[in-house]
Image: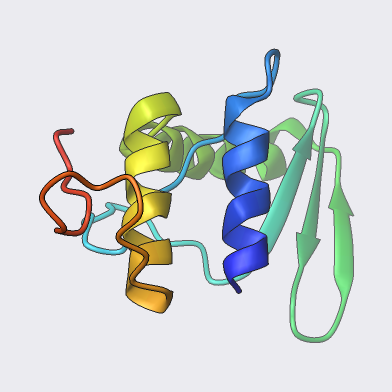
Length: 109
């Protein structure tokens, strides 16, 4: 798990990449019940328990765009996302290296 968090840090720091992380405590107006991927605003792949669907109809795609927009608004990016990942990592491995006061990193989002 720590390795995965370290990989997320690498991706957040990469130029040209924007990674958003939605904190667990954030209240969302819409919570997707299954995974979905939006491709170029003309196709959405939806993964349900029994099937993978490929939606291309504008009316079928629109609810997924709205949900994604809500998730995007709630997501932390760049330094705020890095702080969130650092706190999660600290919960797994309380490494005090580089922390002046010996406390876990705190959020200033």
